[in-house]
Amino acid sequence: MAMRGQSSGSLLSNHTKERVTMAKVTLENFYSNLITQHEEREMSRWRS
Image (cartoon, rainbow, N blue to C red; front, top):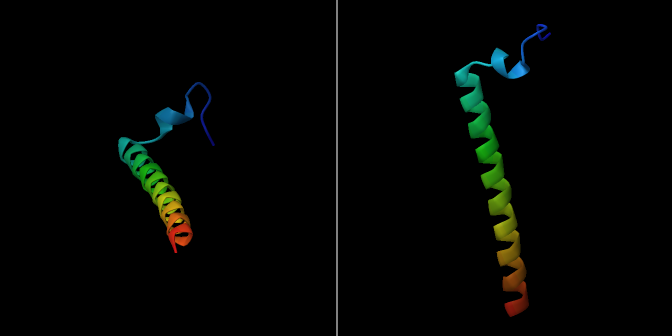
């Protein structure tokens, strides 16, 4: 439970913030690559 008078951000350590950032970047890259692969497969289908 968050303490009154403190923002939830101040309750996180720098290590935790870095891990959250890395997880976010990893997910963004995964979905970006997934979209790219899907588009490449669609283009490949049209060429065949």
